[in-house]
Structure formats: structure tokens, C-alpha cells
Length: 289
Image (cartoon, rainbow, N blue to C red; front, side):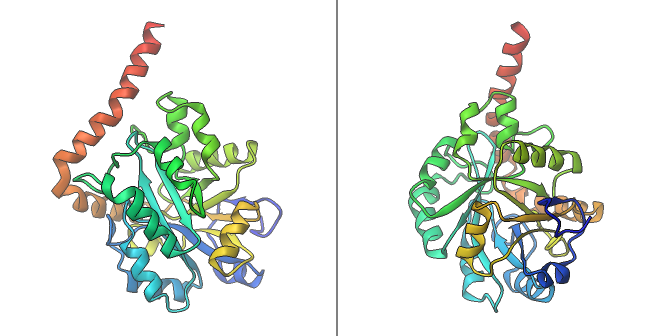
């Protein structure tokens, strides 16, 4: 199927030059750098993006220094200022800002004081408070990998399904990440179905932690500015094209993430314990019923 047909979600490898030839700007909307738990430097990311002809949204975990560096050296690459926030309950929320200055203000005002020792893990801030705090800013709130991951609560819709978040939480989200390169095909298809059934704006990104993964999933809009691109997503004009990253890249990613979390092993285990206690209590409650 052509990636330019009326269907907005395509599980296939993006052919970036064809996407651009059709008037779309492809942007990988979910990328991590050395400023959080990845192996990607900002110069290497911008060089690759320039070579591929794609924009990038840097979405480091609870951190913005990568965005600041990229915006200072953009080299003609479209950079969407973003952040991936790890809520106290577990779900990850992607926020995309219309300007780096607004992202910096939001981070200083609402996030910096809630960081834990293992700063890439959960904030001392609930999902509800994160979404509420973003309401006063010009940004787009997206549910990252909404049904992920296996065995842990990293998606808003997964937490709604297992009753560790109220159903109304999703009403405060602007969009759904329908293809995340780190998720399996069936999990992404589940997210895509949900977005279609509930008429949500859609995004997609590689969730890259290693450079070769960048550009494997892209969100495409007929706009080449931050404002135009984000407005296009909210107006439901976006097309998402991509697939799960290769097993090799997944293995590389797992190694990079593990290496970055070694210094915070004890505190990370504490976070996992805190996040899974409500899930266990709900499971036991359902058994008793």
C-alpha cells in the first residue's frame, strides 16, 4: 500500500525521499540521547537527520539539555522540542512544545524539583499532575506506547485497563503514539486501533537509543516549521509510517539502557516496587470479587 493513500497509519519501512517528494515532512517524534539513557550524541543525531532528510523530536527522559543543545546547533534540521516524562504510577507521557523557551520554563517550574535519584525513572509527580501542569503551556500531550511494556506499567491505556489509573485520564491527552519502534507489532496495532476508534490525533517515533534506529518510524505532516507541524498533528493531518526496530537494534538498545541504569540499581528497583504494588493490590481485589 502506498504511504500516501488516505489510510493514516502504515506498518512499513519509511521511504523518506518519496515522503518528501509528496510534500510531507517526516519527523522521528521519539528519540533519546546521551543526555538521558541513550548512546546518541547531538552532533551525530543532527548529522544523521540531515543525511536522511528528516526532522527530529528529542524526547529525553525527564531531561531537556539535549533539546537545548540541538536547538543551538540545528544545522537546518527541524527540531521539535520535546520531553518524555515518567509519571509516579509508571506511564510515560510525551510533551511537544512550540518553542524551546516554553519547554525550559515548564521544566524549571514543574519538573526539576520532582526528579528522583534515578532521574530517568519515575518522577515524584502523578500522571494527573503532569497533565494538569501542562495545561497552561502551548504544547501537545501524547500517550507514549500506550499499551506498553510487558510486565510493567509504561502506558496510560495499559494502566487504565488494569485499573491503576482512572478511565478519565485519557480525556486529558491530545494524541496517541500509534507506532513506537520499541514495541511489538501487535502492541502498536492495538494502539492504532484505539486511536482510530476514538478519533485521536496520531504520532509515531522510533524510540531510538542507538543511532541506526533513528528514522525507522516517522510522523509526516505537510509543514516544515515547529508550529505548522504540531498544528498539523492536532488537526489530524498526520500520517505515521514505520515498524518495530530490528532485533539487532533492540539488543543494542537493551545494552545501552542497562549500562545507564547500573549506577541507580537500588533506587530503580524501589521505583519498580512502588509502581507494581497498586497493580498487585488490584489483581488481588479482583480475585476476591
